[in-house]
Image (cartoon, rainbow, N blue to C red):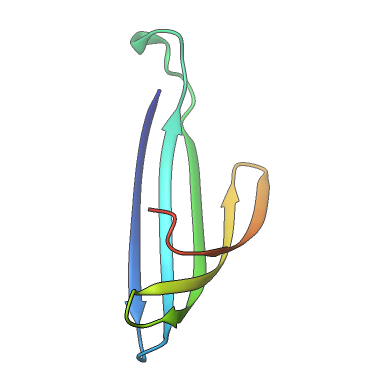
Length: 78
Protein backbone atom coordinates (compact mmCIF):
# COMPACT_ATOMS: atom_id res chain seq x y z
CA UNK A 1 0.00 0.00 0.00
CA UNK A 2 1.10 3.56 -0.59
CA UNK A 3 -0.71 6.77 0.20
CA UNK A 4 0.23 10.45 0.00
CA UNK A 5 -2.03 13.27 1.09
CA UNK A 6 -1.84 17.00 1.67
CA UNK A 7 -4.15 19.55 3.24
CA UNK A 8 -4.20 23.33 3.37
CA UNK A 9 -6.14 25.10 6.13
CA UNK A 10 -6.99 28.80 6.09
CA UNK A 11 -8.76 30.48 8.99
CA UNK A 12 -10.10 33.77 7.65
CA UNK A 13 -11.68 34.88 10.95
CA UNK A 14 -11.16 33.85 14.55
CA UNK A 15 -13.81 31.13 14.21
CA UNK A 16 -14.34 30.41 10.50
CA UNK A 17 -12.01 28.67 8.06
CA UNK A 18 -11.73 26.75 4.83
CA UNK A 19 -9.72 23.68 3.86
CA UNK A 20 -8.64 22.02 0.63
CA UNK A 21 -7.14 18.55 0.45
CA UNK A 22 -6.01 15.92 -2.00
CA UNK A 23 -4.28 12.62 -2.13
CA UNK A 24 -3.36 9.56 -4.13
CA UNK A 25 -2.88 5.96 -3.11
CA UNK A 26 -2.97 2.37 -4.25
CA UNK A 27 -2.84 -1.21 -2.98
CA UNK A 28 -1.04 -4.20 -4.53
CA UNK A 29 0.32 -7.54 -3.32
CA UNK A 30 3.88 -6.62 -4.42
CA UNK A 31 5.69 -3.35 -5.05
CA UNK A 32 6.13 -4.06 -8.77
CA UNK A 33 2.38 -4.71 -9.19
CA UNK A 34 1.05 -1.20 -8.54
CA UNK A 35 -1.02 -0.44 -11.63
CA UNK A 36 -3.69 2.14 -10.95
CA UNK A 37 -3.25 5.15 -8.65
CA UNK A 38 -6.50 6.27 -7.00
CA UNK A 39 -6.67 10.08 -6.69
CA UNK A 40 -9.02 12.05 -4.45
CA UNK A 41 -9.72 15.73 -3.77
CA UNK A 42 -11.96 17.64 -1.43
CA UNK A 43 -12.87 20.88 0.26
CA UNK A 44 -14.48 21.88 3.49
CA UNK A 45 -15.47 24.52 6.00
CA UNK A 46 -14.52 24.84 9.66
CA UNK A 47 -16.16 26.53 12.63
CA UNK A 48 -14.12 26.70 15.85
CA UNK A 49 -16.29 25.44 18.71
CA UNK A 50 -13.67 25.82 21.46
CA UNK A 51 -11.02 28.48 20.83
CA UNK A 52 -9.02 27.55 23.94
CA UNK A 53 -8.56 23.94 22.76
CA UNK A 54 -8.75 24.65 18.99
CA UNK A 55 -11.63 22.20 18.44
CA UNK A 56 -13.51 22.66 15.18
CA UNK A 57 -16.78 21.47 13.71
CA UNK A 58 -15.99 20.36 10.17
CA UNK A 59 -18.02 19.97 7.01
CA UNK A 60 -16.14 18.27 4.14
CA UNK A 61 -17.01 17.10 0.64
CA UNK A 62 -14.68 14.66 -1.12
CA UNK A 63 -14.46 13.21 -4.63
CA UNK A 64 -12.61 10.13 -5.82
CA UNK A 65 -12.73 8.04 -8.95
CA UNK A 66 -16.44 7.55 -9.61
CA UNK A 67 -17.56 8.43 -6.06
CA UNK A 68 -18.24 11.38 -3.81
CA UNK A 69 -19.20 11.77 -0.17
CA UNK A 70 -19.92 14.34 2.53
CA UNK A 71 -18.54 14.29 6.08
CA UNK A 72 -19.48 16.11 9.27
CA UNK A 73 -17.19 15.76 12.28
CA UNK A 74 -15.65 17.33 15.34
CA UNK A 75 -11.89 17.84 15.38
CA UNK A 76 -9.50 17.46 12.46
CA UNK A 77 -9.07 14.13 10.67
CA UNK A 78 -5.28 14.39 11.14
